[in-house]
Image (cartoon, rainbow, N blue to C red):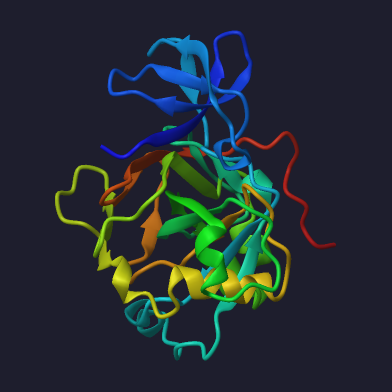
Length: 267
């Protein structure tokens, strides 16, 4: 089994990076693993921590329409170059945490994706150079308020609500050749999304190099690589599960968001 790198919160409230063991205990690291964190003598038992998102990025750079069939289902041509957008770091949430349905939207969609974790400062890199800059991989769900995306004509509001970027459950260093990504809803046995990661139009190394020639990527930053066809709506109470072979399962439940104030409407 590949080593699984996690980020956890102990019962005392302390945040740690660590190595998840087969018995679900966690060997604590003295720093994030991409900053050469080393195993310490501290161990958290299986019931002694809460699993968090496996990193705390300064930014999330996402790629739209990076699978041909998804571009087709959206009724648009394939981009000639990677179509980039940003999600704020406050969208990040963990496996098992709620995805909150905002009152401003009537149509939020799941988008299962492979996420890249950056390990070294990356600027003006070639695809060959970024192979040493990519530290590992995890699973993401690029939750999107589809009605707001159509309404606004650009994607910031639709992609940026708190909890709209579940990440996890952990990071692995390598991808399985020809690994598949699948998304499941509730108790259905048939996936609503299913594709090989090889079907990406722009491959991970090219994406990271392309982005690095626009903005500096920092250790711990996340690149979302796009979603395959089959995106669809979520309802309050739904359970959405994204699986990638060789990584694991990211599962979340959709819950009502209860804002402290009423949404601002135009005057």
